[in-house]
Length: 170
Image (cartoon, rainbow, N blue to C red; front, side):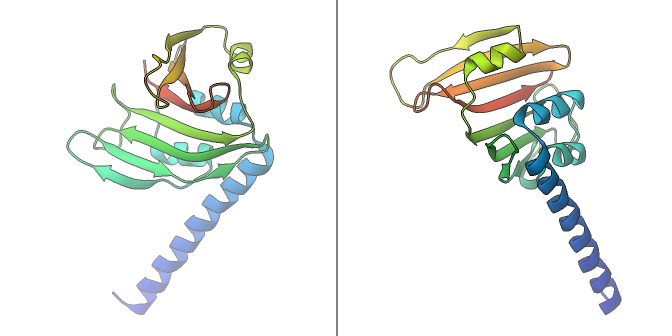
């Protein structure tokens, strides 16, 4: 590889990194978690590059095998005080959204309770609840929409606050 090609690749990397940093900065200053959920639901089924833009973080390939590709993203602070701790996007091996694909967003910061979720989604139903055997138990709610479903999970360690949400296809 020539010096010129190396310099061009490095410049391309810097431009891509700064564009991603700019998206994260704008997301942090201007978006609530509800804005993020709305934008993501509009792009179902997910494509990795559009998902990165709407979530505000660059995804890194964690695992790829004959069944799936698993991409992960890092922390993003939102304008409403909610923090996206991490993101997980699972696609098929060719990075296409299929029947087993989905995305999970892990949260902290400002507490989002089930009443706030029910105010925004009228068809929220409890689909799982703790059985009292472990602090790993969760209370899980689901909202079915035309594009698929949103699953809201509350952990036993903080039962009043949304721990993570998952997007699934139809």
